[in-house]
Image 1 (cartoon, protein in one colour):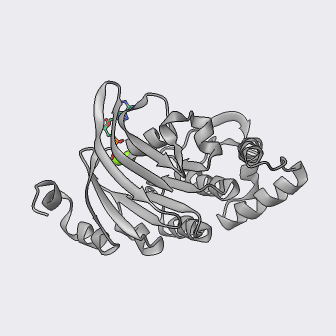
Image 2 (image 1 turned 30 degrees about the vertical axis):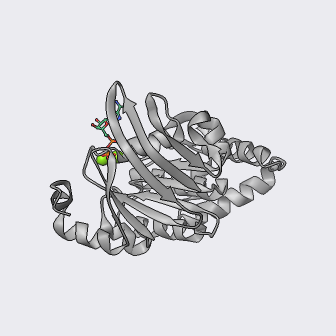
Length: 249
Ligand code: ADP
Ligand code: MG
Ligand code: MG
């Protein structure tokens, strides 16, 4: 699904990723943890092709294709989805309109007809319900005035509609109360599928009680410095990151 080899990347002339390796197979859930400023969000941004995040060397194979060779839209059409740590607001564009345009673009790429408005509205309403968002959120501007928790739920709803191959969730749990966390986790779990993979970036082991990962990685100073099973998250919760960064591991 995703094979990252020796990835180096810079942002604003600053080297952030420094030889990152990661392989994600279909159906797997990988958690990425690590200290602030390690490069976790940068990894998501580089993979999604965000402006100003430049891969300088290394390779990224996404489902048999060269990911770094594609522009942002192509990556999304090919089935890459990134839920941002800080979802952007797009005032003036209705959430429903935005969702339909995104979903139809992906469908076109897959050789499918666009949804007719009635069918799509019905589908979007179902997904709203699944993430416990009021249907009014479909009429509002994209993320406009949404609370932190509502933005995160909206991202999960978008993910459900897009049916991506690879989902990258960047701190989707931060700022969520326990009920919202449960809603988000249920949303993710409902999308787990042998053909769909997840990279879940989180600071807290708590999320991983709900979204149980196959692997846990520690990203520090631009590289994966330790990998393990879900028990690694518990160890990190207990001991912090220092013991790894100090080379004691
Ligand atoms: P993490 O998500 O692990 O906390 P980030 O990937 O957000 O870390 O940041 C890694 C480093 O890259 C930080 O030093 C941060 O300041 C820097 N960085 C990230 N994005 C930008 C940007 N757009 N402009 C300048 N520096 C950035
Ligand atoms: Mg951070
Ligand atoms: Mg971050």
